[in-house]
Image 1 (tube, rainbow, N blue to C red):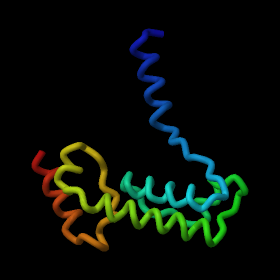
Image 2 (image 1 turned 90 degrees about the horizontal axis):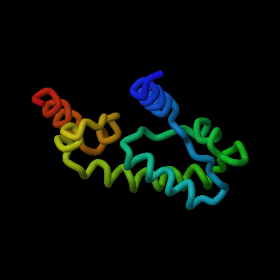
Image 3 (image 1 turned 90 degrees about the vertical axis):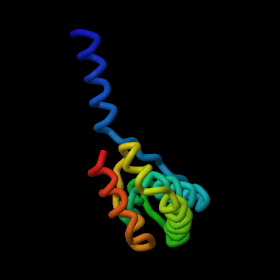
Image 4 (image 1 turned 180 degrees about the horizontal axis):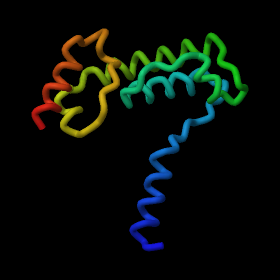
Length: 115
């Protein structure tokens, strides 16, 4: 196997498996995780989805509220960026700003079409 083929194989494996963290019971960890997800432009996750990442296998109401609180902080920061710059850098937009900045999606797509 050539070095190029090996490198490509490793790249494909790395891209196909997204590693999700195992979250402790500490609500501050959940808050940080929510903020991190929103800052990455990801949509909010359900309690059921988050339970898979919990060390205990469950998500308490306090943990989920902490996650949502962090998510809202991260979302506000994410949506403050210029949608055109997001498009210019080639990062995907998943629609998390649609409810607070109605023209964010339009600005993103218009700029992406003109690249």
